[in-house]
Length: 279
Ligand code: OGA
Ligand code: MN
Image (cartoon, rainbow, N blue to C red; front, side, top):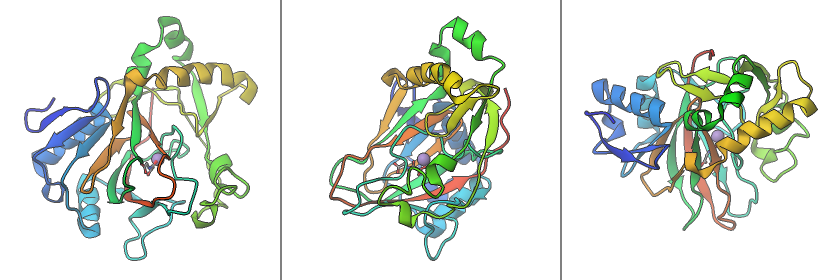
């Protein structure tokens, strides 16, 4: 843990809660320490924040570049901010399965800054899984087996016309149905900043091992997913008014729990630019 930040683990293998920081003012060595904490622990939680949309954007700019999301609705006034929203009468939520944002991009987004705006009375937590811990827990034979493999990622089956979301009651709000995506990445990547080995496949967007059919890819992919699904590697973010989470898409998977039917939930997300990934 950093000496600059007062922080404590969110769970034994994943996540960190950072105290005594107002993100609206974070810069310099404080922001450097926050970046390092996010890269290492995968997700950092900050309580009692007050971040206006402008301050949210300024924080993301101080962090690095902003990627504009191609699919989620954008706020009318701030195109940098994507709205992750479920209305009280909607059944389906955004991100309600284990996934890694933007793994279908050639240069996947580094992560996101998610700000809680409207919360249900209870539920709507977000789970995170640490992919360094998941990798470490694989047996040595599996580690050898996946060492030089690459996998193909796409979002077409999720967001395209006729895709998973189009068949739900949030399909009408999403954009980008005509986009085509696809990228190959090593199955095991090295974190560009920490150097830690991370399992970089996920059940939502990774469809094949390069050179294999879908059918021949599934047994190995399922074995890898099973390790990442082990709750030992997980942390749970319980949102409160004023909670902000910053996560790293390389270090973690996440899963937005959809256990608050009949209530609205709205989050503001800014996606942070990443870099090309390598083994
Ligand atoms: C996302 C996402 C999680 C949540 O914004 O990428 O998956 O808890 N959201 O809303
Ligand atoms: Mn997501």
